[in-house]
Image (cartoon, rainbow, N blue to C red):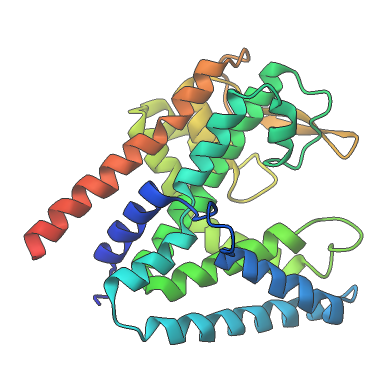
Length: 298
């Protein structure tokens, strides 16, 4: 397999496009869920209010995942490896989650599964805003970033990225329990997402053909507490000419977040549908050009 894994990405994305996460199979356990089980199991034995203990746990999990995936990578079959790589990509699942949310009668319950902010007192507009923000942020974490690392390093790169991302989602919190213990994995997640987050912002700007977004996402993106999340969110806000960010309730307290554009503050369902159109644009880019690549190299 070549260093730059065009075929692997194309076939893996195709599998995700048609079959998604294989969650419909009763006895199937998603590999990323298994990684989560490993993290939870080790935390019981390694937890201590210490940066070093968190570092050791992260290192052990990454080593375990590396060797397991390395062994699987020795099976030199492109379809098998693409099948594995598809578990690192969440394009269809992310799209379906947000689409079902905005068409659900229980939108507050569904948005609570996707965001960490308080949802009990959300207005319809708040739900739409949160949907767009989480879609933009996860467009980077769940799609562009794993594709980036699969492109460079194959399935090993994809799974190591998802492991870091899972560690951060489980332990990368600034609270009493994880302030120290989760610091290493949180910083590691910042590092591995640095380039993909900016690539995502550029792609969003290009897909929506927005000069304003392309030349201004950095100015607004750097206002976010995260060194990465603000960039795709700002690119989305600027592209759709809406105002994302602003004061948000977390755990009963209002956090005075920055605004990530100067657009329309009245966010409606059609704005979410516009944001979701990113998937069809990326589908075309990867599947169409991937088909051309395979034809030219066959």
